[in-house]
Amino acid sequence: MKKSILFLLLSSLLIFSCKKNQLGGTSTISGKVVHHSKAIPNATIFIKFGEKDFPGSDTTKYDDKVRADNEGNYTIKCYKGNYYLYGYGKDLSISPPLVVGGVYVKVRKNEDVKADVAVTED
Image (cartoon, rainbow, N blue to C red; front, side, top):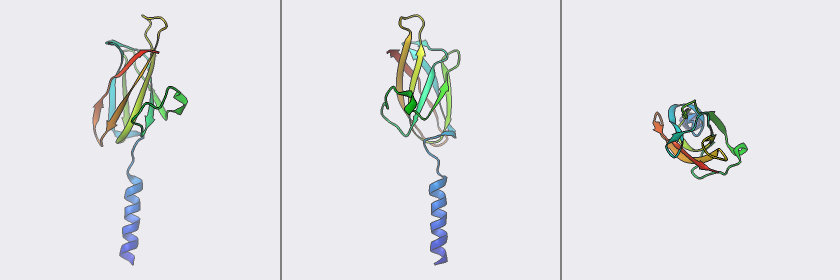
């Protein structure tokens, strides 16, 4: 009886300690937000946890966001899982300048994934 209770407690601990589909882990997603081959500086990348398909353009339904730097580069520290990244920015060489686009990313434990976010005219 004691062994089965101990087994149940250890199993529960393992199940609940496996983090997945959230920020802050030992894996990394990094890349560049690009319109054709042009970097989009200061773009916002919205992150949807546990998603493989485009969840839509309503950014209030995303779980978190990061900002790209002046060269369009971004980095996200995360745990293993599925993520949908939705980029939103401005290409001032076109009118109107709004560009959007997204990409699905699968991440394994301790993996560094490169994923450029290609954006296009809205």
